[in-house]
Length: 190
Image (tube, rainbow, N blue to C red; front, top):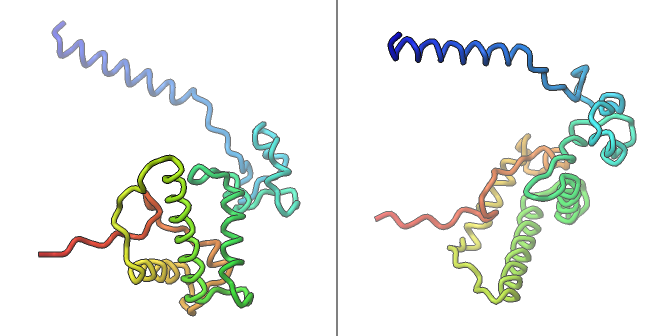
């Protein structure tokens, strides 16, 4: 037998083995067994870690985990999902200066800018305490920062009525950025 035939037989044997394994491997269990979009306590019972946290995650205590409650159980950016949900709720409440349940563009820009300045000050303080210089990175101008925040508001305003409701705010998924900063000033074109 020549080398080509031996190689062909080996490849066929490997493919047959993989196909057999794929057919006999157990299917991954689905948490939402009946596919109704919610997870009941009975469905969670098949998953020990979820069953253990079920009552904690079932915020409205209706015996089911809704899509919002399930999103809150996943870690995001190294934070617990529930903490992130709580932080976003606080951001909305703090930004809603007139307490009408809607954010105007100005309310959002003012609150977002204040929080960004606070985060920047905390970063500088931590760097100073660690004996390090604040990392040099190009800082956008205030106008550029407000433009970026305004664009975020526009993406949040799903019905384009000039205000953001709590539902629109909760549904919004910010574009991921590596450093959490607005885009740096582009280099001048020559």
